[in-house]
Amino acid sequence: MPTQENTKVHIRVLENIDRAVIALDNDGIITLFNPAAQAMTGLSERQALGKSFNVLFKGQSPLLKLVATALAAGRSVSNHEDITLYRPLSQPLPASVSVSPLLTESGSCDGAILILRDLSRLQDLEQAMRQSERLSQLGTLAAGLAHEIKNPLGGIKGAAQLLDLELPKESPLREYTAVMIRETERVNTIIEGLLELTRDRQPKWAGVNLGKILGDILLLQKTVYGEKQIDFLLDLDPSIPEFRGDEALLTQLFLNLIKNAAEAISDSGFVRISSKIVADYHLSLPGGRPAPFVTVEIRDNGTGIAREDLERIFTPFYTTKHLGSGLGLPLCQKIVRQHDGMLKAASEPGSGTVFSVSLPLIPPPGSGLGE
Image 1 (cartoon, rainbow, N blue to C red):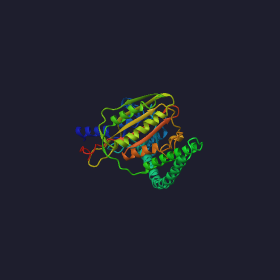
Image 2: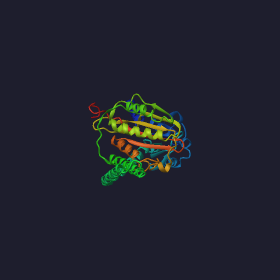
Image 3: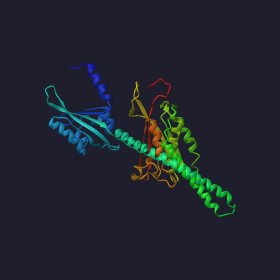
Image 4: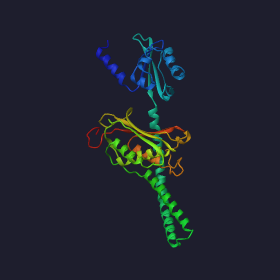
């Protein structure tokens, strides 16, 4: 017989496990709905307990079929690839689902247990890995190509400057030498950006204050777009502690994203920067507790990004800007990757864009925590 203490342990396990656990009786009535199930489905325990699973998840045929099969056949069934969980007031969620019969001591079926796992985070990690591989493949080619271009480019610029010195001040040809010099400088800027993208500079780890970095950036950006009416809004979680990071790289990252947001606004609008600690991700530290993540969202109500463009914005040299180089976002991706984080983008044309940066709250060097 289970003791009262064992029962308490089982309850704590169900309350703290990161998988959704839902128990049904033989009639499909929900008898258990743990906190993870509430978070994944968007339904509260009060909304779920005592209700019919078929009614609450009406229209979600693949999920209902798994439950019906487990109850009817008395065997475990699962689907780890093709289940999409549709939720009220939230985006659909890809999920891995296992359903097992709930057996009595005599072996008869007394209901079913569903275990659901959120696969969206796994898909985020897979996408980040693919982007990392693309940048790695680009690196070897880019480094050699940039080296070969820089030398003749310097010669062209030097020749144009000498020619400009030889021409009379009133000569109309000086207009052409000015164009040559300007364009070689532009190409050189692109090459330098490409080299920065492929250069293996190791971060200089120290304790960083996220609120200070974002506050300093906004203080400067508010004076840059005087011709536009842009409200820069800052909504930071004051409980976020200092964590391990490279302040210069993180400043470059957030400055680029905030500038992109402001430039996406035509005449008037807002750029909202918010931060919060999230429980969706954890990074395992050697010999220490898992590190939670902080997510910073940079949201604007600008022109937005078309879906076909959104899939390619982290590809080097791909840009939707008239004078853009297409290297800013890939560089942001590299900085986030160096910090063991993730960078995502979501957008609706005409409604704006949101970039989400998730970084692990690894204790600063020398703190003795997680080391």
